[in-house]
Length: 201
Image (cartoon, rainbow, N blue to C red; front, side, top):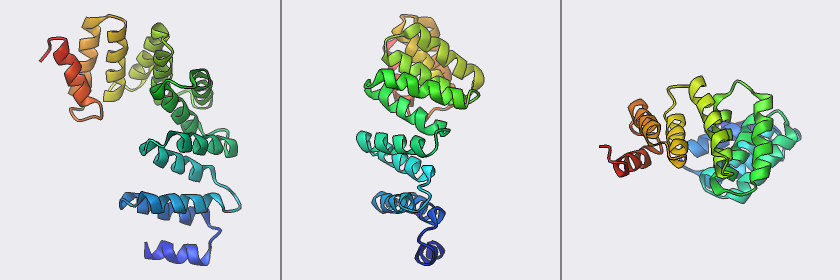
C-alpha cells in the first residue's frame, strides 16, 4: 500500500497503479475507497476497460445493478473483445429477468469472442431459462457441464433446469452431484433444500 500510494502521487496517469490500489483496498474490505481508485483509473488518458470492468464487478457484488450495468457497458465500449463484461451483463439480466432480448445478444457476443469458455454456456442456459425456453436452456447448461464437469454451480443449474422441466430423477442426480463436488458452493443450501423437498436426505 505504501508503494502504491507513492506511485499514484508520482504518476497519477498510471492507470495500473490506481487499479492495483483499488484491488488492495477491496481485499482489505474498503469497497468505497476502491470505487474511488477505479474511477481515478477510468479518468486516466487510456480509459482502461479493465477499470470499468472491476468497477462493474464491485457494483454487481453490492447489487447496485444500474451502476454495474453502466460500468460493464462502458467496458465493452472501450474493449469490444471483453467477453467477461458481456457475460456479466447477460447474467445480471437473467437473474433479474430484465432486458432478456439484450441478454441473449450479449451472451451470444461473448461466446463469439470466446467460444471455448464454458462459463459462457452456463450463462446462456440461464438466459434461456429466464426467457422460459427450457429445452434450449438444458442444451446450453449441458454443454457447460460437459466442458467443465467438476464445477458445482454448473451441476446445480442443470438440476434446476431439469426440475423446471419436471424431470425429477435427473434433477436429483445433478443436485446431488453439485454437493458431492463442493458442499459449500454458493447455492449449496438451496440444493440441499430442494433435495429435501424431493424426499432425498
